[in-house]
Image (cartoon, rainbow, N blue to C red):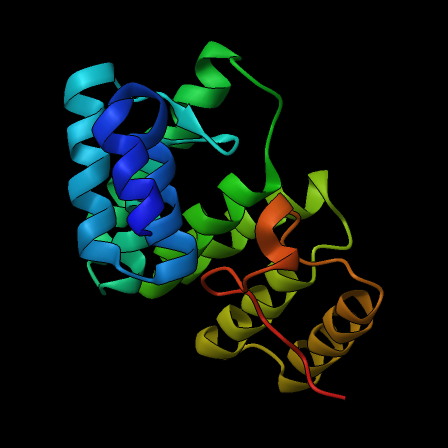
Length: 181
């Protein structure tokens, strides 16, 4: 981090957002990441770092800080912006975290519908299946169906079908489910 701090000092436009990303995903310093992302947005707009917008990573920070409404708003805006403007192809990770925000707010039906969107793009997405099963349980649906879906998720995870961000080989992402043997 001291090297990134120095890089930001010499080339803020290039390194500020990357430092914020590192604070969010690797250092788990969510409040400091939000500060950096806010500054980057003020100076350069809501651009992208590591395939997602600055506000996407701010939303991950807010999820980790239990500020679910803030996360939900940012993720709803992010998903709407991506797909309304067709800036990029549909992204299962964007849907996954949008679903997580709904999940944390106990909006089970909305969460399930969004997890289903992620699963339509990425049918083996173990994390989306796991949280969908939890939503089913919260709704009072069949325990057997939920357990069956978790078992499918476990098998998919064993084959490597989880959050497919580049850095997941180094760091577990927020809400990424690691299944035991």
